[in-house]
Image (cartoon, rainbow, N blue to C red):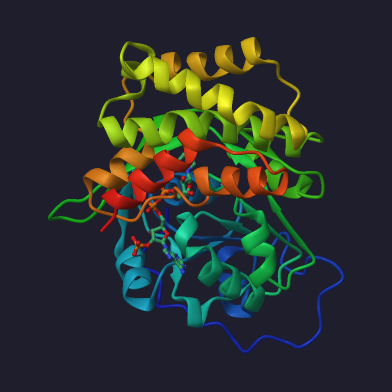
Amino acid sequence: MRESPAPPTAPPPSTSAPSTPPSAGRTEAACAASGRFPLALIGPGALGLHFAARLEGVVPIALIARDEASAARLRAGVEVDGRRFRPQAFGPEQAPEADWVIVLVKAGDTAAAAATASRMRPLGVLSLQNGLTGELLRAHCTARQVEQGITTEGAYRERGDEGDRVHPSGAGETLVPPGFEAVAELFVRAGLRARVEPGIAHARLAKLLVNVAINPLAALFRVPNGALLDRPHRVLLDTLVREALPVLRAQGLDLDEAAALARVHAVARATAANRASMLQDVLAGRRTEIDAITGALLRMAADHAIELPTHRAVHTLVHALEP
Ligand SMILES: NC(=O)c1ccc[n+]([C@@H]2O[C@H](COP(=O)([O-])OP(=O)(O)OC[C@H]3O[C@@H](n4cnc5c(N)ncnc54)[C@H](OP(=O)(O)O)[C@@H]3O)[C@@H](O)[C@H]2O)c1
């Protein structure tokens, strides 16, 4: 935690890519003055602030908000996990350069975040978003390495008259692709459970399986995750798993039907009292991440000429709930 940081401004970026991380080992003030940080995070919402508040103890970290007004509010202080956090926050236009950039905007804001990340001239960009956003990020980002990891860390944001509060909702594990060893090491030093996962593509598909089954049904029926294990929701839950499986297996997911059902049921049981993020979005009248979750599955299915009528119906119904 630091005291009243001055509104930061980044010097103009240089024009050639750095060969070694020039900001490693610098203090926060030195990073702000030089305009290059070892680490930056785009999307300081619930999960982004949870990660950033943990990481600031081990590395200077720049937070990039949606706009300068949001960045100014963050600089004034935000409560994260019961303590005051005053981050080095910037609007997209003032974003400094950074060695590594983590993306934690909602899926619908990925293209804008990718454009910001490109301007920061990073060695690598790591998405920890839900759904499959890697392709979209790569399409809009010029960084050398652009990859998607996965995380089961959880956090939620409470809006209040005296500002936002972010609460952790469960410690999980963060898996990052090879090439992002430096980022995994920072996570571990910050006390987060994290590791490099060589089979990250498989892990992403396994997470997508869980997301395409639980998220839309929780949103449509407006129930916590555990209720999906009971009738009448259980029939649809299992139908979504069985329907998705041939597509995900064609993409490389190595799970048979019994293992796939067991995995989804285990997550619903372990998060029984939780409201899925898609349900929270629907209840708050926000756009959901259905296109990055069920939409991604439907795009894969089209590549394999497989019909997914239940997922298509769920995709249409969730869209109908959006503002
Ligand atoms: N929360 C969890 O427990 C959890 C767990 C696992 C995975 N995830 C995934 O993590 C991602 C983030 O989730 P979240 O719950 O943290 O969402 P969130 O609270 O809505 O945070 C997203 C943040 O990104 C900001 N943002 C939007 N566009 C931006 C841009 N162009 N540049 C910079 N910042 C921008 C938003 O600003 P505004 O406030 O102005 O909109 C908001 O502060 C999602 O993909 C989610 O599925 C979340």
